[in-house]
Image (cartoon, rainbow, N blue to C red):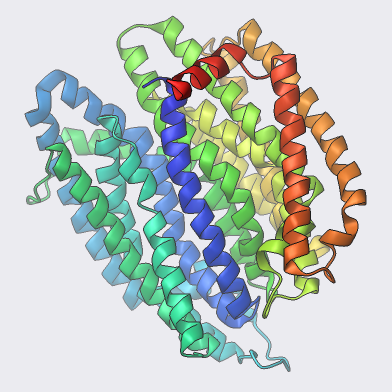
Length: 533
């Protein structure tokens, strides 16, 4: 399977998960709106979800895979199995202890880390969903306790997924997150059927997250065993392999999860304003669709390919892999960013505006989504540039870059939040992302580890031109389709209007990309011939 085919496999599975994620968020928005229960659930879920992203998309893809691949090459499958057992046993023990400690001390965690704004909460008069500050704090703690074991499930799943990826079995690990969406959709449907209160729905969703975590771990474990590989649990021991993994994984987790760290910091600051956490969360979902489909695919596939090429001394192949990955990233993320920036309101209206989610909330979420969109290419570029360091077992440089970016994000969020509320946090996240991507690229160029070829420069310029022209078409279509996209139009008219808007933009972009050569016509023709065959 070629590089594009591998990107398509992981990206397609991730796209499936994101589509069902949209359905989940649509139902949750209608059921909970941006009330205190939605805030409590989003705050409680963000903490274990942060670690899921750190491990699944950062540490184990960046640190475990090269070490596991080395064991596989040098010691064979038996050596790789011993290495995996060492790591799994230690990871299982540490996660079990961490989960117990976190559940016991969860009130302190909520106050100091997850939602410091709740400590400064002041009771105000509210509507049907209004809860006192004490009640908001209590349900946030309770939801966090229920969902925290999800962290352990996802961390163990990440290691098993790393084994699958090292054997170039990408699909099971990529499709596993869809189970979370299936479970939560079923929970929301049941909640509506029995006409449960918002607090009860929040409780059911929290338990649903835990059930989904166990199911995801079971799925990838079954896939690993079906492949003919198994991992046993032993008494944890401090070994050279474990030490090397920690040296690589700590910085790699920080680097790979910079997007989630920025979002987590933003939500912690946003907890000072009721509803702001939910606004950020709802805006994050449309933005995560292209980021997940493209960024995760590149992050999962590029590192093993680069590591194998470099270890075999095939430097020209490594450079070509990096350049083609950057082309792929720009080709899909630049038009997506422009579209999300120019037409966020119709997108948010169609996805969310019903039930407890009113037109005024649509405007707030759309404003945040537009600012997030400006950072979309940056966060995908981070996924392209980081493997250039990881494949050479250099985690120190990108860790320093990530720390600079994280500090910049915190400072900008604190400054901009008081002036622009949740929009300031979105803008801070975007600016920090571009700072991170720029510094990573500069480091690779300075060391001579990245050499862009003529094809990359030409296609990148043509992608920007094609996307800019697509943006002009979107602006013109917005004026024509305005009656069908307004809040007063019915859902069927809004859907039709958005479909015409998005379809028109995509048709213009892909036609221009093929006509100008922004897309590699030879690759497209090979794909078409293969499909016909």
